Length: 395
Length: 168
Image 1: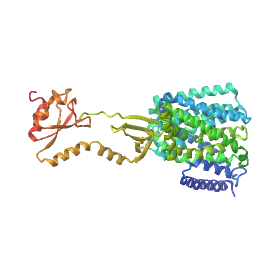
Image 2: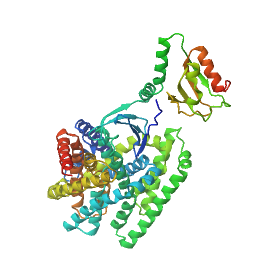
Image 3: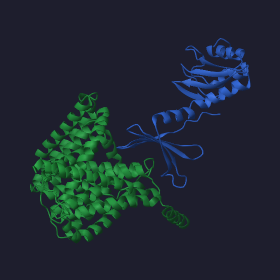
Image 4: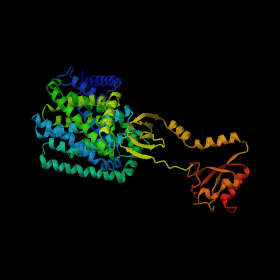
């Protein structure tokens, strides 16, 4: 058979299988991310079936997947929201960063990994999955809850922080050393601030330049611009993901709204490819030795996330049940952790990092939404009520 | 009845939209989550745990508009319709406050309209908003439209008073 035909058969079967998996997952209220990762594990090197012909194709698809994930994230927020939120929620963001990066970094050092791997693992444990969490909040009917803005503002700060973290990781992994890392950070800071200022001041004219009336032209121009900027950003060593994120932020108004609608299906397709690709690059045989460390890390960093949520919600005057809801809701890690781990895999950090990250994300992304539901059960509520009553009587 | 200004709080929900909520005089909190894609959720808050919502009811555009109509303007219309059914001789009329009216900037009580004409001012329309049952301390502004209920004679009297044609 010709290579292209094999590719069509393999890739087609893969997507079809993912579709079926996603459907099964939805029936159990499961996010598709863990399923895609598992599918990748099953089909990768050392897995059940090996996909060979479509590997290069999947690699490019995965890269586009990251870019689309990020541009959509940028489209969801307006520059005003990002900056306005920054003032009020910065302390919560700092608590979040300290409580969740430190355990990851220490854990890596404990495993005897080098500083690069520690930096990467710190990022993996830091960022909650905004996609999974927004979905969970919607499913549980909590969008109106008073703690929800707290959760969202923590997520927004994390996402914005990625615009600075990713360039640093990219630079450090490329082996440019501390000075080189600082200079890329400088470039990143200047670029991000410039884009935010331009988006707030001139977001209207930029967005008007893209016509909303012609859907096809809009799709091509937005998608094209995103890929172009992502490529330029990668060339400047600022990471293509950050470039895409900034394009999303710079667009606003009706253009952002329509672009979101049109890019969503593309994002779903390529993001699935990305998660599968990450699974593909991990050998399932490497998983068992890292399962226990991954479980330990997951338990530890889920506790620190609960603490983060508790403290952040308390700052906003939320009562005990709401603080716990905030904490549990923040526990799932997802797309960003995989993106960060993906960067590390490409540049060949510790070979155990990828399987550990896979196991870690699998554990948190599956158990996180289940934990988020915990404060809704009546036994949990009764427990809290008794606690609060006891506190009141002693006070 | 004194006109109570309700405080509606607005909270941005980054990435989702915006939430408006208010605390009713009975102590319950009601809110509306407006999604950026146009969806709206009506949310009712838990009494025991005021941070969480008991129910979140998605509303389509039409449903939201219909509900707003039912809750808002019809409060007054219902009263008027009831009056009309009870007494055949009663009329309702919208009377625009003339620009040169002596009552612009003065209180409703100063008109002594009900005492002098037996017609009642049941609502005021201002900037396309309905202010139902204005109290005696309600202050008129230019371009207000007064909704009054009364007999033909009484309504004519109110019109004359508002225009400043009669001496106070």
